[in-house]
Image (cartoon, rainbow, N blue to C red; front, side):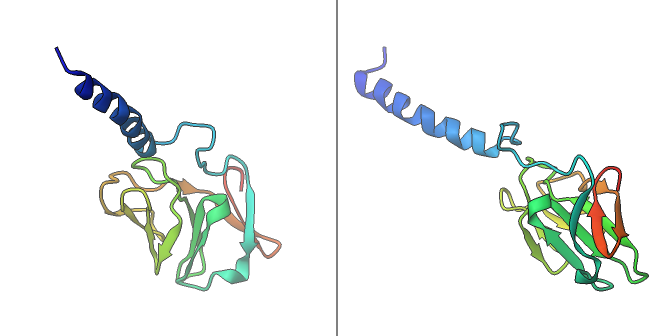
Length: 136
């Protein structure tokens, strides 16, 4: 039979372990980040030069412009644990939760633990503005 000290120590650590597990879960809670479910106006088309990328943290979207001028957009919700990616280093997106890295121009995984690419979103330029998301 465990002693009083062992039981108390286990009870004290249980909430801490629960918090750690919750932080790693994909975020199904009410405050979980999400990708656009409708067209979202992100900013001026002129903000992204050919060969450049721009991270729109508020919309959870990254947009890149190819050398031929075409736009591509990807959700910045990490495919590993559902965290919102908030860092763009050159053309590499870095997830703050577990360090997964993605190519912002292709959505491809550059560094694990993520194994699935980012979800591509429809994107277009309309009246000088970038619009991304379903129906764009």
